[in-house]
Image (cartoon, rainbow, N blue to C red; front, side, top):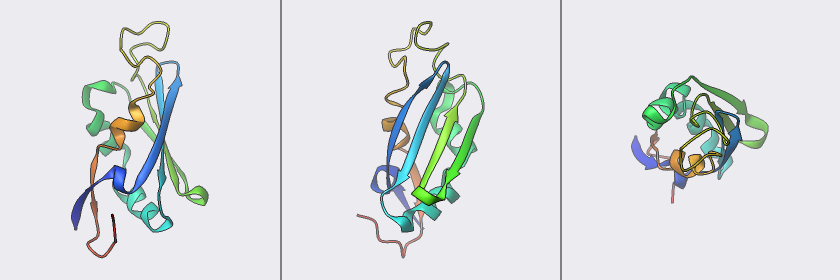
Length: 111
């Protein structure tokens, strides 16, 4: 196994629904999707965000498009109109998740 930054395997988009950040992680190649499913558990995603996510993390799998969707509850300090956070709508959550390092099989070719 080798450690690879998620940005080498996926791209992401994020936004908000009240106090919940929503982030989609999309595999750049179909062969990367099973690695994302294995490595991006709700527990690991929550640990990556640390104190920025106070509630649970939910994960939804979308194998038909090679994507995972995460709901990060209680992550926006009350939501867009209430929060004092700089990222009131959770737009940079996607950039943050792509900074994660995950384990990737040695035989998987990654740029």
